[in-house]
Image (cartoon, rainbow, N blue to C red; front, side, top):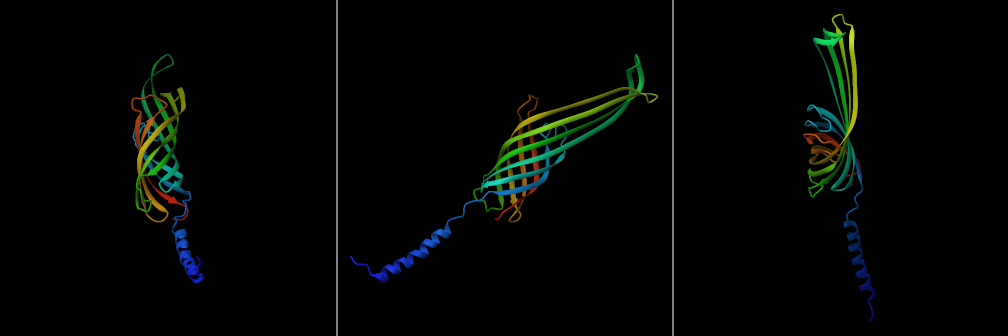
Length: 221
């Protein structure tokens, strides 16, 4: 069989554009992207950053988007509480009960570091609103310092005591999050976590933490 040169040239010319189209249509491989976030968090009693009261604490986050639907992030939360009071009354010193005044000051600091995996339940990454499943662990360190002083009616110090302690707590975290894209790089985030205290037995080892913030993603869209 003999091939006609003009026919062969025509077939090659038609195949080249098709091959070029197939190459350009293939999606580019995903490249991991860094992101940072800033927000506030509040927890229920016994949560990592609200052992006694439900107050807001600053939250700083850094993470990496490993896949379009998978990300790993670490955050840092800080909480501080100070209390002071005094009360007059009868106190035992110098061998008996005497009128005096007791002054007390205390300070508690907590630093919590949650490390979480985020998995998008929304199948289309280009959607503005994304729903995430969250899971991970939190390490929280508590430090507490207190000082109590008792003075007599002449303002002489008759008793002085100091108390300090520090402890670490470990939590298992499970929860859900929302991300609403405001632009190509900026998103509004909201997370709700349930915390299970692992290293101590308490009357209530389950707590919750809510967080709101902004997230900025580096790299191309």
